[in-house]
Amino acid sequence: MPKFTGETVDQAIELGLSTLKRSKGEVEIKILDEGKKGFLGIGRKEAVVVVESLEAIVKVEEEVSVEEPVVELEETKEESRTEQNQTEELVNLSDDEAVTALAVYLTDITRDLGAPAMVKVSRTKERIMFSLESDKKGLLIGKHGKLLNAIQYLAQVYIHRIAKNRLSIVVNVGDYRERREAIIKRLAKQTLRTVRESEQPVFLEPMPAFERKQVHSLLAGESDIATHSEGNEPHRYLVVELKK
Image (cartoon, rainbow, N blue to C red):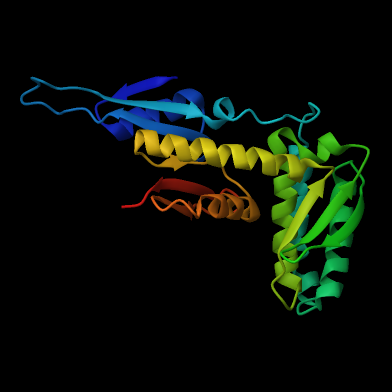
């Protein structure tokens, strides 16, 4: 485990983040020693922390190795912003009308990304699932699902803007979300063990709202554990810690 030291805990953490080139939401932090200031330099002891990338703790299954079309995605986001005036005319659509409009929107996004997809819609009690069927699944998913999560974010913003009712949606490609759910369960167990052993909070990687809700639900029955979200979408992440 990579250990980092500093005059204070914060300095040690910052050193670890800069060395690993990660944000707090992408690592697990353990404080091994808070250090001591000492008196006139005598007895001073540096703080020691472990900063470890979550990718090293829970091995995420990688999709087909492709380069994410960052430029195209940014262009799609820009187009999404310029479409605001047009979608204002669609505000207060019924659930069915909003779902149809979003399916068309997702079709346009996937075409612009160079991975045209057929959109299939299914419903559960909790949410509406939009499954993207494409010959270029790896392209739409991106490394560790980052591109798919970006599409998910755009879709959620879009439907919140046009639908009369607040609808919870999930965008999926193949069985990625199902496999990701299994990973989330393993991550929740590992995080629970780490928090109890270290007695320090753990900052999880940024996740879509429904994945954060999954972790909340998985840990809700643990009487000594508290969870809450921090940050802004689409980089909002979960903090798991012992109850105070």
